[in-house]
Amino acid sequence: MYYIFIFFSNFYLADIITLMNGVCGIQSVLSSMRYLTTNNVRDLYIAMYFMPLGMIFDFMDGRVARWRNNSSLLGQELDSLADLISFGVAPAALAYAVGMRTYLDSIALTYFVCCGIARLARYNATVALAPKDASGKVHYFEGTPIPTSLSLVALIAYFVSNDMYLDTLPGQMIKITNDWDLHPLVLTFVLSGTLMISKTLKIPKP
Image 1 (cartoon, rainbow, N blue to C red):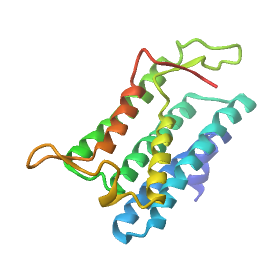
Image 2 (tube, rainbow, N blue to C red):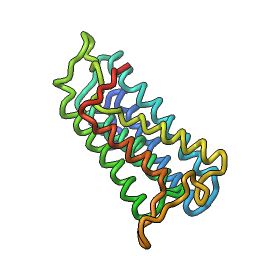
Image 3 (spheres, one colour):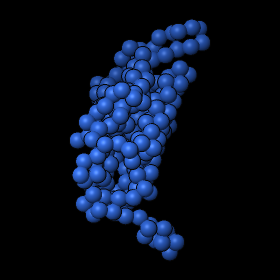
């Protein structure tokens, strides 16, 4: 316990809040995995609830860092890693849990997560050169921010609440060949990932 205390004593308050974002993402992934064994829809709802909760922590950490004027490179890296779990891996795990489980689906979901990785890595590598205001705040995002994946979670939440999941997913499943099947709904993840890595799309930062 002593070493754990020493480890966390090197973290700022904003870093601890960022870690809570990561905790939410991990809990979401585990809840989606739990659904695969329990088939209890409650586990799906828990998985979905944790993602916007992570967004709250993601919103708070930057503001706390600016308020206390103690942001750090460690905090920036923590933020990206936590975002990847909560808004990249967790939505993909949820999509798999609700029925997007074919081999082509898994390729599409992997593409989505990899786009999230690329988006966050590019941001970390270029944020020092990005235009900023007097407070040091970046003017815009290049490509859609990874938390926009919550729109996909909201869509899935709507479908689950209306019993449109597993075998009744909207669009059903289409057969590409005798061995290759695809749920058209997974293409929304492909679109989301592609928008994240766009170099021409600039989103003003609120």
